[in-house]
Image 1 (cartoon, rainbow, N blue to C red):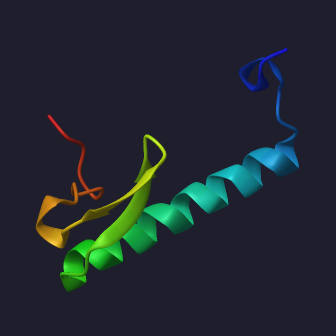
Image 2: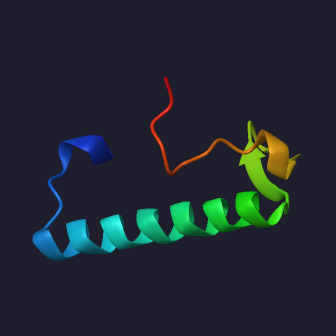
Length: 61
């Protein structure tokens, strides 16, 4: 059974939404302050400069 097949309880949905918002807020703060972020991509740590961080406040085209 895949994790996508499991329905989240209402509490888990709220927790998931809160974590996603907190991460998005932290990324946006780094972008606005000109600070880079580091992520894991394909099993390797990659640092993204602030000017390459996508703006999360507005939808991308």
